[in-house]
Every structure is written in C-alpha cells, then in structure tokens.
Image 1 (cartoon, helix red, strand yellow):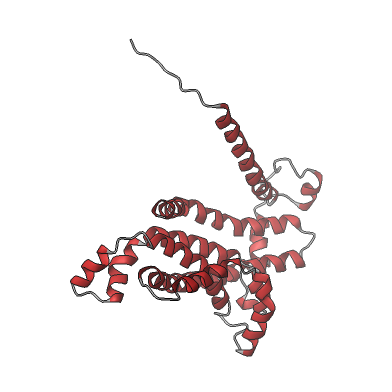
Image 2 (cartoon, helix red, strand yellow; image 1 turned 30 degrees about the vertical axis):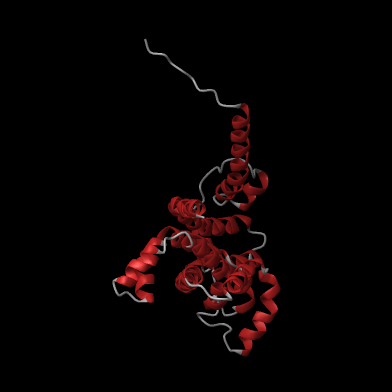
Length: 280
C-alpha cells in the first residue's frame, strides 16, 4: 500500500511567497504599461490609459527609431560599453591577481583605496572631471567616456575578483613555478581560466552600468554623432515632450535588449555571485 504524504508549507513561507509575488508585480507592471501604451495614439492614451490597445500602432516604433536617431546611438553605446568593459576586466584582473597573490606592506592600504572608490558618488566628480578632460583636450571624442567608465567600474571589479581569487590554493602556483612558468604564464594559464564565473558576473554588471549611464555622457559629450542611447532618449523627451506614445515606443526599443541581455546571462550572474560567496 502506497502512502501518500503531503508536505505542509509553513505559513511564514507562504507569506514570503506572497510578498515576493507582490514585489514582482510592482516591478513588472510599469514595464508592461509602457509597452502596451507604446502601441496607442496619444488621444487613446489620454482617454483610456489602462485598457488594452484597440489596435497595435507599429508606426510609433518606426517613427521613434527615425526621430530619435536610435540606430546611431545604439552603435555608439555598444562600442563604448564593450570597449570599457574589456579594458576594465583586463586591468581589474591584473590588479586583483597582484593584490590577491602577492604580499607587500601597503597591500591592505591599496585594496582599501580601491574599495573606497565604490563609495564615491558620481555626481560629486562631474565638475572636476569636466575641467580635467577639457584641459587634456579629451572632450567630445569617440573614447571620451572610456576613462570615467573604466575608473568608476574598476573598484567593483577588483573587489569581486579579489574576493573570488583569495581562496585559490597556492599549490597551483607552486606547481606551475616548479614547471618553469613565469608570473604572467601563471596568471594567463592557471588563474585567469579559474576566474571565469567572476569575470562573467563582472562583465554583466559593468556592461549594464555603462549601457544605462547618463551623467558622464551628458557632461562630457556635446557632439550629436557621439551621443549614447540615454542621451538620445533625453533629447527625444525634450523635443517631443507631449508625444508620450512616441517616447514610450523609444523607451521600449531601448529597454527590450537590456532585458534580454539580463535574462540570457542571469544564470551566469547568479553562479558568479554565489560561487564567490561560497568560496569567501
């Protein structure tokens, strides 16, 4: 005789599930509302803002794409975001390797300086950074944003990689040294491959930071052909302040790739964060 047992879920767990479900709905609803209203006319939006659209007005998307010049801004954002991420990861990995595997007197002080960098608010640096970039003739160039993006993402990347690298056994390096490997060979062939989960996590976080960044782009870039997507959306909202459906279509065009990027790599982000937590 088979005995069927049912496992009762504690009331506190059910309450937490309901709370998380409520938070999920609160986060998803504005996105769904924007997407639905991007298919309406402005008149329909004003009369029935919470109904389903009577018809899907796809022309809003083509108009938003052309009016906001999103193709050029997409390209600019992609180039500067990928370049900044690659430079950040290379410098961050080398700095983390040095801080994690070598002993020297100022090690704690140097690591503390990098961690302190995560606490500096971006807006407090805008004016001095603008003056410095102007004096160096680095305003309005293709790679103007590369410098602040790398500088402000390095503390997070170094902290993440050092935390992930610290528990690595020293036996691996000692065995490589016995085989005649140098420092850079040990880093490239032994340590770097083991950093893959943390590097993927750092890649996702820094790419999204760069992709959505507005303050530096607003202050340091004035040339229209060099502007990024957040600047393009800001310009569109200024030029078409009363055309809400057009703005929602533009926001949806920008939003969907970001959501897809996060959904596709979310598994690797979770693995990297949890691996670092377990090893730490």
